[in-house]
Amino acid sequence: MASLNVSHVAIRGISACVPPKVEENISLPLFASREEAQKIIEMTGVERKHIASDDITASDLCLAAAKQLIKDLGWEPESIDGVCFVTQSPDYVNQPDSFLIHNQLGLKESCFCLDLFHGCPGWVMGLMTASTILSNNGVLGGIRRMLLLDGDTWSTTIPVYDHESRPLFGDCGTATALEFDEGAHDLFFDLGTRSKDGKSLITTQGAARHPYTMDKYQHHLNLLNGSEKPEEHDDSMDGMSVFSFGITVPPKSIKRLCAEHEIDLGEIDKVVLHQANRFMVQKIAKKLKSVDVSKVPLSLKEYGNTTSASIPLTIVSQCGKEYADNHMKTIGCGFGTGLSWATCYFETEGIVCPDVIIYN
Image (cartoon, rainbow, N blue to C red; front, side):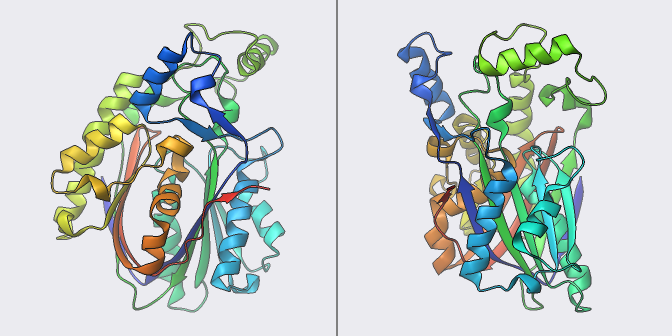
C-alpha cells in the first residue's frame, strides 16, 4: 500500500447534485412480491435512488454542483487553475469530461484539465491527485485553486432485471473546491490495489478487449430495456468476494492510517465510508470499535450507492450543516473497483456546503 502526506491544501467547499427522477425499490418490476422487495431494502438500506434519464449525464450533474459551489464561494472563474474530473460514465469516447466543464464554466485557457477513470475509491484518489498538484505548485504561485468533480450515472448501464445491482445504484455528481493554503492541516492518505481479485467487480463486454458484436450489443440493449432477462454468462458482480474485501481491507486501512499519523479514532468527528450497502458499512464501523455509530453517516436510504460520489454526497446530505458551522476532523474511505481502496484524513473549517441540488 502507498502512504503519503500532502501539505498546504484546504478543502473550501463540497456540493452535490442528483437527477430529479426517483426510483422506488418497493415498486421495481424485478421483484416477485412486495415481501421480496422489502427483504432487499432491509438488507441494503436502500429505499429509493435518484436515477438519470437518457438526457442527463454525469458531467451535467457535476456542472450544476460546480456552478452552485463557485457561486457560494464567491470564486471568479478566472481564479480557477485546474479541473480534475473522476468518472466511469464519460460523455464521449474521445473527449474528457473535464474539457466539457472547462468550456461550460468559461475557465481560462491556462487552466489545466485532467480526467481520472476510477470506481468507488475515486473521490479519495481524486482528492489525493488534485491536492498533490496544488501542494507542489501552489507555493510557486502557478496553481492555487482547483475543482475536483466526481460523478457517475451508473444506473443507466444496469439491466432492468438485474437483481444484484438494480436495487442498489443511484446517480450523482459532486464538486469539491480545493485551495492552496500554507496554514492548512496536512492531508493523509493510505492507498492500495489488489488487482489479482479485480475480476470480482468488472464489466468485460463492450470495450477494446471484448468489443461488442452486433448480437452481443443487441442482447445488451435488450437487457437494459427489460425485453430480456440476464443469463448465467452475462457480467455480474462476485458479491461474496467483494463483500469479503469490503469488510476486511477498509478497516485495516483506516487503522493503519491512524497508527502511522498518531490519529485518535475516538476524536474523529466523522468516518465517511463508501456507501456500498448498509450491512457492509455497519460491519466496517463495528470493526473500528472506538468509533461511535453516530459518527458514521448513511445516505443509502434516499440515494443508494452512488459509486465514487458517495463520500461527498454523504457529507453534503447528512452532515452539511455540521461541516458548514464547525471545525471537522474526517476520515473518508472508498473501496471497490480494482479491487482497490483509498483512505484519507482531512480537517475542515466552516466550509461551504449547500443543500443537495435537484438537477433542473
